[in-house]
Image: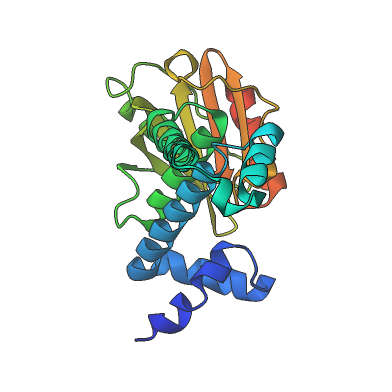
Length: 248
């Protein structure tokens, strides 16, 4: 299959390790190939799950010292009780990791990961848009009655951005709006949710670039939480964010 050549380098592409020209070729192929886009989505979700799980527990210096002390003791000095204690400790750590990862989804890193997943899922979907229109006066009214809040869309005249449409989406089981824009053949997602409905407490300066492979900006305004994310340049993400801030 032709796609096997692309898929052989898919992980390298997702890790951002391909040359710029090859990355652009991959961008175009992933957007046009349903098989590769679905594969990319699966791998992104797996990578994020592993990253989040790996950050859930960091052993303290005291815990490390105690384990090292036990490991370096002669084996004959380890009684049956110590062996059970070590086994119980390992089980406790695993149980803590599992319960924390499954039961806690409200920290900011997880929210940013979910936003990135929503963006990638849209690109991979065969029907990414529920209301297709370049007219903000058509897209905005479409959300009335579907989400429990209202928001404004910016005027795009004299800008490089074009509105493609929108869809409903959910973050932490909270309904919100997902707007999709295009700039120089790059798709940018804008998500809008009610701030008070989100369990995670975010601040406008809390985003670390390492928490997502995409450029992203987030802010709170008028009781709403906005996320602007995409593989466009940081300058384009910032420009679209400023248009939304001015419109709101």
